[in-house]
Amino acid sequence: MSTKPLDTTVPDGAAGAFDPAAPYRLSESVSLRPEPFGALVYDFVTRKLSFLKTPQLVSVVRDLENQPDAHSAVRAAGVEEPQHDAYLRALAGLLKSRTIVAR
Image (cartoon, rainbow, N blue to C red):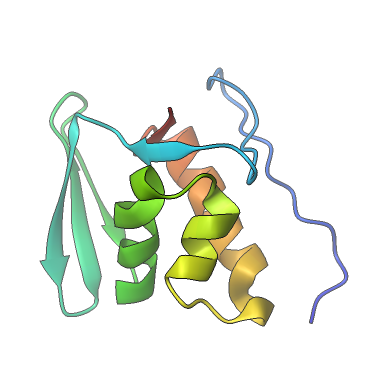
């Protein structure tokens, strides 16, 4: 397990730093298309196509709106404890790209 602190800052004019204790949801302008590797992510506003690289990350992102915070969404998706920081960093990146938004 890494002892390196989790950097969840979201630069470049985003709404603020990612807070794993805060509630999030998938942006209304974003659609997820399930794929064997995870999902295609398409933003209808920016017309940007990106990828979620694991089915488990797709589960986390889809369940964000049903959980009180990002930590809970990661745990509810069954992510193993040693991987929590990696998933939280992924969510921070998704906030930066506006794939997910605060609610």
